[in-house]
Structure formats: structure tokens, C-alpha cells
Length: 159
Image (cartoon, rainbow, N blue to C red):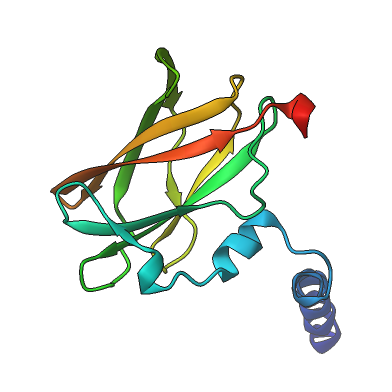
């Protein structure tokens, strides 16, 4: 009787998890997070931060940054030897290049996507089209640096 109970318990626990893993490994369409995780960033794609303490690459997966729609940016951080920075704290602000009075403040947490130094700046929704200058500050266990990058947000109606 105990054997049957244990067998049933094991089946109940493992069957749903097998379905979950089978679905994630199937040929179904990958999510934006899976695509970002799978993307390999080669050394030539990195650029140095302002004080040259770190290397950084900012990228999108679908390149569909438009006004009024939620999208994600991804950040790859490494030290100058190319070793991923997995526990750095990052703060993000910015402004519209054509009108610096229009500010961007990202209050969300920039969290690590995996152990490869990749981070997600998720669920960003911008209401003004144009070129945005985004300013990021990095704190990796007291070693601090900043960098800027520009990203174009297109008007939703023009898509």
C-alpha cells in the first residue's frame, strides 16, 4: 500500500513538471526573454563605459520600440577582461534628445536574466517618439561607472 502511495505521489509531482519542460524545449515560438538569453554577444559588440571600468552592450530582441507599447531592453555587462558581471546594481534615467526637459526615469529593478552578465530593463513604455538618450549608472561592489546610449522610439501610428 505504501508503495502505491509513493508511486502515485511521484507521478503527480513529475508529470506536470515533465509537461512544463517538454513545452519549453518544444519547437514553439520562443519568448523575448529566451531570445535575449540565447543571444551571444561577441567582444567586438561591447563598448567601454565612461571611466572605462566595464564593458557594456545594450540590445533589443525584436527591435520594435514604439510609443505606447511595452518593450524590453537587455544589457550585457562585463569587466575589462570579458568576465560577466552578475550582481551589479544598475540605475537608469534619460531624456528626449530633441527636448531634454522630457525626462525618462526607470524606477523598476534592472535584474539579472542569467549568469552570463545579462540584465533586463523590462516593461518599458514610452509616450514620446524620437531619439532618447538613456543614462545608466553601474555599481559593482563599490566599483562605479556610467554610460549613455541612444535608442530610437518610433511613433506607433507609423508602424
